[in-house]
Length: 232
Image 1 (tube, rainbow, N blue to C red):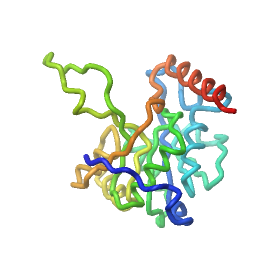
Image 2 (tube, helix red, strand yellow):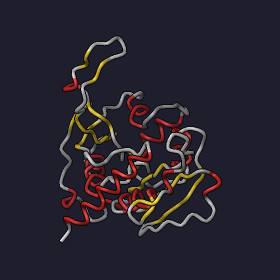
Image 3 (cartoon, rainbow, N blue to C red):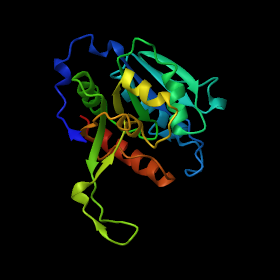
Image 4 (tube, rainbow, N blue to C red):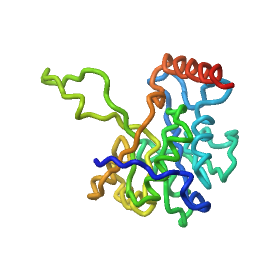
């Protein structure tokens, strides 16, 4: 991976976002969480709506991938175009279902997990700016703060580790090529890297944590409430 400081979002051409689309992946069954966390209330909005709001800030359109029984009647607000499609049996299959709904003229495609509802519009902007700047694939990362041990008991040098987040951004043609072989991976950058492309990193956000357990929802709600208190 290589690290790049994204160019100023404000310096991009006015029409730079016209060909940016985001796939928000929200097709999970919620088995580990105990319910479908993407539809849980988080500070007066659903987890999914908060993720769509951030994606909408940089996108001409958003494809929202949900379980098949949730497609009909899903209420989502968006300023740009919004398309709702049914997901697949795995995350990669759900992304491919989303890709199939992205217009052919899209030049940049972002993929974001709805379970990261606190990703800021500024983070989305950094990712988009790096792709428009020429990167084939961009991932936001944060340093690992915990001490890590390998399965054989040895301590891993955490200075050599980075935790990967979403949204991840891609040249649309590259992402489509990466998914054409119907491969499986825990994130899309891994599939792109398998094609031989370099992965560019940008600074992620400490608050951009993935909701995995019900206690994570409580922590996220506290962060939102604290942010509101700090807003004049």
